[in-house]
Each structure stands twice: as structure tokens, then as C-alpha cells.
Picture (cartoon, each protein chain N blue to C red):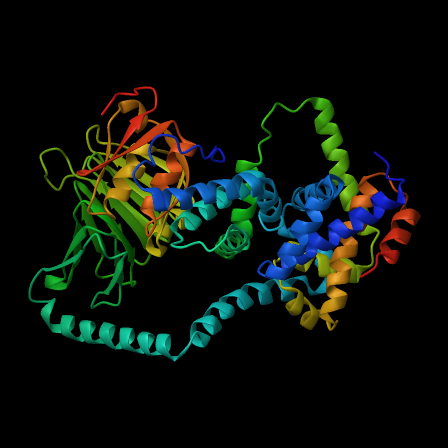
Length: 351
Length: 198
């Protein structure tokens, strides 16, 4: 296609300007209104914008790796690339500390609490087993262990900690927790979930303990996973090593495990109030959500349980998710005094 | 993949008229602005399916809103929420994720013929050629904004230019490549690019 018409050329020029403006000042309301106005004015405007947008996407395919973009960045490529990653990290800190004195005090107070807890634990934990628990209401709760490791507890999750006799043994009951482990070669950090033992030296990993399976997702470092034999003796019949970026799912019934490459960041997004899914069975999405709420969602039809869901659930907006669900999947949301249930639209049973 | 909701909240909103009204307004808002919203999101995100995911997240956030004053207010609010969600996503991912995402989600919906494939490869070669025809300072400003997600102000500081010039460089690069892709000669595209009022 050749553009000859001077008007068409100008239109593409305007569209290019809009794209660069919107990209760089996404929250200017004035601009947004002006852009929507321009776009609605003439279908040709919307079309020109779409074409510029297509090109914008082509750039990613034309320069798919840093190696290729470095050519464009020229001699300063490495300097700029480094400045870029450093810049964004610093941005976060600056924002945190510019967000007002109230949050600064909150941070100071939180630090004081953590230190207090750690000091208290220093003497108490070596004496007995301590139990940590989080309820449905709390989004997540971070606890510092006496060795400097951290545990982020998911809702309705209990972890017991046993640091006696110079060891680090933890037990995760059904629920989910994320562990950031302080390296200590003499004292392996062992998390037990069901019949699985997950051992880390210095690493960060997530363990999710469900009724029929245990999932171990490693974000950093390597962990060793060991399954106990059916007679619960220590002689294990299977063991795996899971590296960062991988997830091991162990199925309790068959004592079999699958290992796959995953986006570990998505797996641990729950710590920031987001549950992220790619083609996940609706049944396991609902099981996760139910840990965040005191009013469980019930799935009525098995056909609904097997539907797959891709998207994000905000744990502070489970109701919003429920409302949008019938538009996305063939389900009916039934609200009753007892709670909420999901039914197939095919079984239009009266109630 | 997740389909964009159609928002026919049939059957289940009875007995909750206040919130049902709000839901109705939000659904209407989405129907009216869906295309514009996806288009807007694509300036930040990598592909259509990701834009649709964010649009759906924005929809959920909007449903949470207690007392919407008017739909005109809602509209700008919708875009602002969507923009924030998109920016959150960009911050969370690094370059590696970006490439994986491209591979994973940009599968064409219909089978691509060998002929289409050739055209696509030619387009990519043409894009690379067009960029190479531009001044190095244009290339650098563009790549920092497009591939490193650096702000106009950051690029201006790094390259010792005014923010206005940086924006002009990036805009011209996009405009020039579009014209070259549409079959304009090097001279014609260059002339149009320099005449672009800014």
C-alpha cells in the first residue's frame, strides 16, 4: 500500500504523535480526553492510529533481543541499560519515602516490631516449637525467623517452626507460604508439607499445600525435594532437585511429580494481593480464593470445575471477580444466604 | 485465552438495584469504549491478549467503585485505572519475560500461510532498514523509550537534550518507519517527517 494523499500522511503524523504522547504521559486526563475526541472524530483517525500501533508491535519482533537493541542504543548501550534497571529500583524507594511522614512512621514502627519479635524469638525459639498462623482477613503476613530468614504466610495458613538442637525444621499445614532463606550450610532449612520434605540451603521458594498435591516453586537458588515412603519412614523413595524458575507439583495419591518451567513471579504474586493464572482449572482457582474469604464459593457442576481460567484475581475484590465471571465463562453465579455457588449455564435448574 | 467479557449480566442482578445500576453503567461504559481502551493499552503492552487481560482487570476495579458520579467521570477513571494496571505490569517484568511473553501469547489466531509469512519477514526487514536510515541520535532516543521503557525526562538527561526534542525524535522515528512501511520513498518519508508540525 502506498500513501500518496497528503492528508493521509498528515493523519499518520498525528497518530504517531498521539502514540508517543499516550505512552509517555498515560495519566494526563486532558490528553486522554483530547485523544478520544480526535479518535472519535473520524474513522480514518482511528484507523491511522491502529496502523501506527501495528508498527509499534512490529518493533518488538524486529528487535527481539537486547543484542539487537544495543545496536540502536549505540556506544552507551551498556551504561544506559544499567542505569535503566538501577533507575527503576531507586524510583520505588524514592516513592516510598516521599509518600508522606505517616508511612515513614509506619515503616519505622514495622522495623521496630520485627526487631522486637526477633529478639523475643532469639531466646524462646530454641526452647520449643512455635506456631505461626494467618487468618482469612490478613492479606499476608511476614514473619522474621531468628536466623534472619523470612516467612510470608498466605491466608488461613499455619506453619510450625522447630529450631531446636541446631536445626531448622518447619512444617506447612494446608495453605501457602513463601520462604526467603538465610544461607547456613551447617543447618539445612527443611520445610515439610504433607509427605514432602523441601530442603534449601540459601534460596527463595514458595510451597503450596493443597488437598491432593503439593507445589514447590523456586524463585532463587536450588532446593531438594524428598518424598517419604508410604510407611512414613525416612527412607524416601523419590527425590528431585528444583532450580529457580521451575515448579514441582507432587500428587499425593499417585506419589508422582511433574516438573515444569514457570513464571515464578506470577506464582508468588499472592504476596501483593494478586492471584495470577494461565489456563488454570477453575476448581483450583476457587480453592485459592476460598482461603481469602470466610464465605466459601461452592462449585455445583463438575463441568464448571474443569473450565480453565486465565487472568488475575485481586484478593481485595473477590466479589468483582465473581461479577465479571459470567461474562467470561459459561457459568451462573448463584447468591444465596448460605454463600455463593457456581453452576453451569447448561443446567438451568430452578432454585 | 480469556475472552473480553460481553457483559450481559442476565439473571443474577435482581434484588440489588443500586449496585445493579452501577454495574449497568460500567457495562455500558465498556461496550462504548472497549476498542479505544484496547487501543490505548496497546501503546504500553506487548499484544492484544495482554491488553484484553488488563482491560478485564480494569473492569473489575471499576465495579468496586462505590458511587460513580457520572459516566463521563467514569470514562477517564477507567482509562486511568487501566493505565496504572498496565504500568504495574511493565514494572514487574524484565526483558526476559517480555520475550517469553511475545513467544507465548502472540500466536496468530488463524493459520498463517507461507505467503503471509514471507510478507511478515519482509515487513520486519523493512522496519530494520528504515530505522537504520535515521540519525543515530534518533535511534538511541527511540530505543531507550521503546525497549528500555525509559521516560522522556530520563532520556533527555542522559542524552543532554531537551525533553521536547526527545519526544520529537521518538515521534519522527515512528512516523518515518510507518511511511517507509507504506511504500513511501526515503526522500518523501524524510520530507514528511521534517515537516511534521510539533
